[in-house]
Image (cartoon, rainbow, N blue to C red; front, side, top):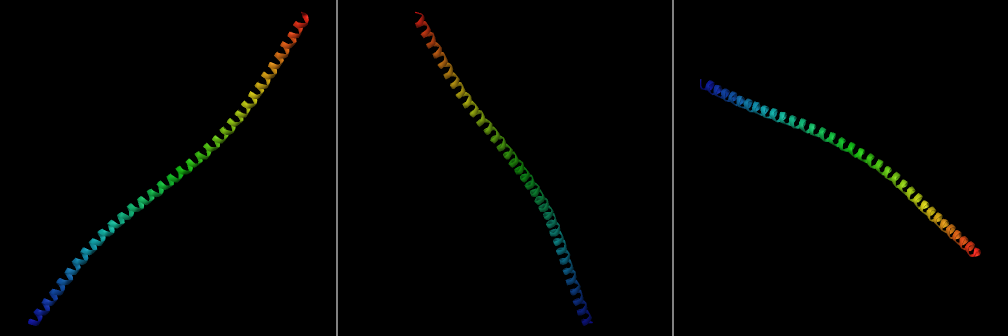
Length: 125
């Protein structure tokens, strides 16, 4: 009878130990499942943040490319305007030279006319 009681007690102790291990395993499973859920959520958030960063980068690159194109266009326009301004300056200089030449010619002609009148007046007297 003692032997049966000892076996029964040993059996109960084994069953109690197995139940304790089972409860511990279930707690660990719940813990790991919760950690897995949190890790999955963090991964999804990280992937969403990564996708947003990639979109932001594409937007920045597009803005950079647009700005570069605008700068190139502005440089081209500036060069055209500088070329036109230079051409206008050259034309202005040529016209000023022509005005000076024409004035000199007019003054010379007026002086010649005055001299001729003076000669005519002096010969008439």
